[in-house]
Amino acid sequence: MARIPQNVIDEIREKSNIVEVIGQYVQLKKAGKNYVGLCPFHEEKTPSFSVAEDKQIFHCFGCGRGGNVFGFVEELEGLTFPEAVAKVAEIEQIPFAPEYKIDTQAHTLNSPQQGLIKLHEKAKEVYHHMLVNTAAGQAALDYLLNRGLTEELIAEFEIGFAPNERQFLRQVFANEKVETALLAQTGLFVERENGELADRFYQRIMFPIHDAKGKTIGFSGRILTTEEFKGENQPKYLNSPETELFNKRQVLFNFDKARPTIRKENTVFLFEGFMDVIAAWQSGVKNGIASMGTSLTSQQIAAIERVAGEIVISYDGDKAGLAATDRAIGLLAEHSNLDLAILQLPEKLDPDEYVRKYGSAAFYDLAYHGRETVFGFKMAYLRQNRNLGNEKEQLDYVTELLQELAKVDSLLAQDRYLTQIAMEFHLSRETLQQQLSEFKQARRQAEKKPTQQKADYEQVSHDVSGDSSSTVLPQTPKRTLTQVERGEQLVLYRLFNDSSLLARLQQAQLVFIHDEYQTIYFMYENFIESFGSFSLPDFLDYLTETSIKNKVIEIAYLTVPQDSSEEEIKSILHLFQKARIAEKINQKKFLQQEASQLGNMQQALELAVEIIDLTKKLQQA
Image 1 (cartoon, rainbow, N blue to C red):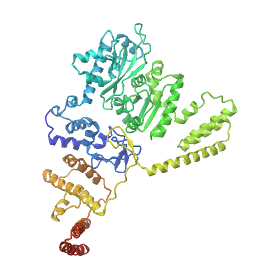
Image 2: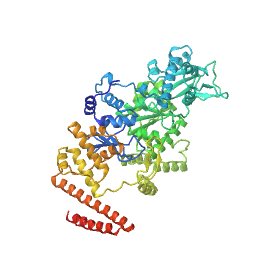
Image 3: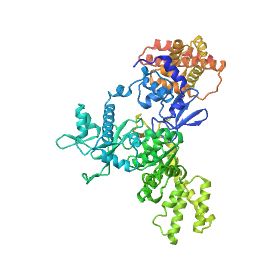
Image 4: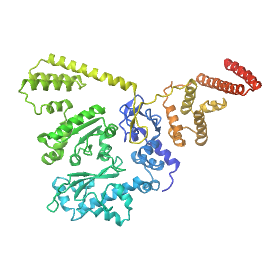
């Protein structure tokens, strides 16, 4: 791979738009002149992540990360700088010469994690080959085709088959001389009592599981029962165990493929099973995902919130599916800001069954035009197992409905449902309204105390380690800046926006009080000397220390009057002069105290005279 010339890097940066690139990963909303969203680097419920389109930079006020478009992709994707440049060019569809492209897989396979990914990718290829090209996989292929999947769909999702042979995959990797210690870490094998490794998956249709970048990190295998294999005591689905790659609390099936459509439509469909996701995809609903057989976790919800504003829950229509839907509603209402809708299928069907019975077009129409509100679902769900002909059960039902209606924010929706309940049960609408108001008041009182506690621990969810594991701690308030520091930041802000000011400051022999601001000023001078003009995104690439980069981002986000003036600059320079005198006075006082403690009265007297002179100078300044 050839080194990417600076002019190519500059061209890609100039032609790309940081809002468009970050928008591929984070759901951004316009807020004033900037865009805001949930930070992808740490878990949060209140957006603190800001993207400045005019400056082409980003900054998170929660975790402090910031940078330009290359820095964002580099850190989020775990890429090198050249890889990040190539990735931005790919996202923005900017022409990029082949000789500058990097074989990222070959480049990164030195790490143990990438080695595990390579083995999973190989296993996926082998399983897929077994399904579509061998006699051993024919029964599994026939099963899938009979379920309505096409060969194109099987190829799209890279579905495979693990044959009924406990040493099949083990032998494949043995032929390639893969170390046993590495194989043991993959989760693809189980260790027998004699220490030998045997295939974990056998006689199963294999669904590859990908991470958000599309890399294979695990599998889910569905048992294939045949005359020769009855599958006694075998679970219907078997997932990869927890490994360095695979954490079921973080993984969402099909999230990598669905993400572009999720971003485009601002909506995600949540299904129960993989076959439901695939059936929906076949029907044109390409923004469907599924969790790994467990309730949604905070990590999964956070990932969804970054790219979507609405979630449509489409679980199975049977009793268990309805109960799962109710649990998901409660979980999402408590832990997310997502808008919720429900796609409830008739005849107790699941999405896969519905597509097979009524066709793809019918499912697509239902998915986009048959959604119901959460309260509409609750009305039907709470009717279950009730005898509404009984007066007591009828009143209990209405009471539960009103308690649920108290959670609905829309006054229009409340009005509509109150009318509907009053008509169905022949109750006074005014009485229902009064009861609803009492429930709403009780709800507000119940929420008041937790809200106060939250105010005491504002922004407590903070990813202190920088990775996916989150620790909840009270966040330390930002240190209040001194007047001098505010002046130092302001003069640098003015420099960033008007490089012609540099000559004026150099003539005044500007020296900053604090080392970090002096370092930024020194780097700024060198940058201007090297490149002739200033560009904030370019300057961030020029800097090497992360702490200095973050401080530059912080300064760039200052909210100050747009126009500067000569009086402002004079005032800042005068402030610096007084600060330097005050610093000298403090130094002299320290030396005077030290001299007195050592009994050197002559030196202490001389220092006292100097302190008096400096104090007069400070008063006159």
